[in-house]
Length: 106
Length: 167
Image (cartoon, rainbow over the protein chains, first blue to last red):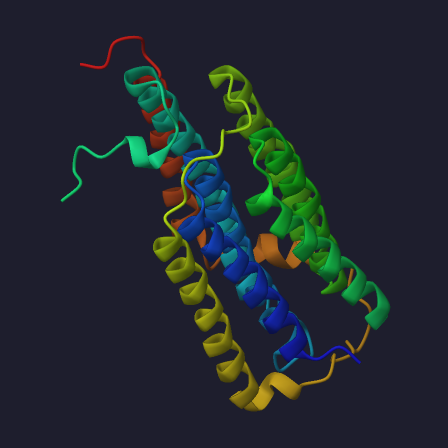
């Protein structure tokens, strides 16, 4: 039988994969994809909580799913703005490698 | 929901999620991300969240990934050449990620409700669009309109950012 803990561990693993991608990769587009993985890891745990914690009528708690809907919407807007920034950056510097962008480096 | 399908789709999602950060070619990473999101949509459906599963496929596997592939091809990125890796920084980053996961695992292990078995509904529900929509347009009406404004602002911002000359 699948328990709530199994879903939470899988969502934690997905979040950790995204976290490792942000920390280890140097290509800014891959870093951006890893951010999406982290957002989706959080979404999975929210939906799992919504299905496992039934309300007083014995129905899934749909508030969690509404929250996930908002996260997906904000993530879509974030992707559009972020990719536009990456394109502007590439026009100015001809690179997508974060180690080449070190003007603000201490 | 058979446990077999849960483990199958979890494995699919995690393997292709790892492929996203291992591949050196950005196009291969983006295509792995599509498979990862489809596995995640299957997990949403296994949790009776049919609406979110559909949205996940439409928005992420459809719109967002097309945007990623479009940008990768617009910038004409090839597989990045191997650079000298700073092993101290690489090892430190990997250690932080692993420690983070074990911390998370310890917290989940101590959670009392983590052993909750899969609850069965009184009757099978397939009208979750109805329930989510009622909440969205009733309880969460103001946040919904704020989100609408946010998307409008994002659209304008993208157009301004992609103009030829930034002033």
